[in-house]
Length: 115
Length: 106
Image 1 (cartoon, rainbow over the protein chains, first blue to last red):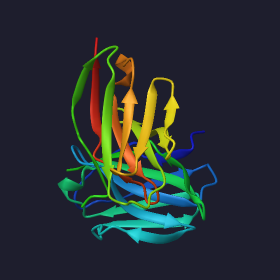
Image 2 (spheres, rainbow over the protein chains, first blue to last red):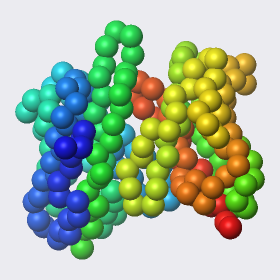
Image 3 (cartoon, chains in turn orange, blue):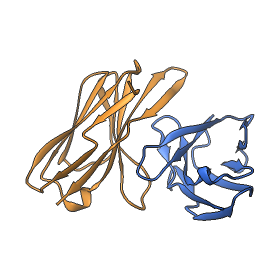
Image 4 (cartoon, rainbow over the protein chains, first blue to last red):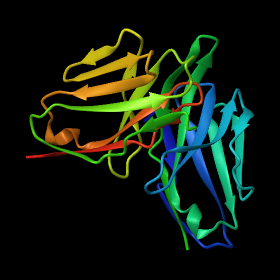
């Protein structure tokens, strides 16, 4: 079983749909992250959860809503998206301690297309 | 100013060449950095960690220059399979650079 698993791998949705992306980590990490990667742009950090609390929200539109029910699962709920939201959405996890941030591992991503 | 900045390239080199990328950073307190490799339509994967003493792994050498606030990645004897985008990242919230695209041609 891979360390960080994301589902679905591909998603096509209309602008009026509601869908959710799922991420699960099997590494025993205590922090999880959502990133967005658009064509020709750097990876953008969207949300950070550490010990199941959201500790960072980088000015992401409210049509993206994260949920972290426990340290192993992370969701990204999507509603009324725009075509410019089409991108690769990557989940990552890591182990955060007083010494630093270790073992950063990415999932394979969900390629989202909004039509 | 962005946390981490990279020259996006692209770098096109022949097989066997030596190629180097630089990445500048703004947070002078950072003690370590990462180089990630990302293949087309795949997730980034950790290539090397970079500490003040530098790091070498086979054909890959990473260096940290604190005075000038940049990190470098040197690839010797390039292989076709080295073609990818190389991302530098600063730890903590792991801010990434834009990535440098490398193509190695036969």
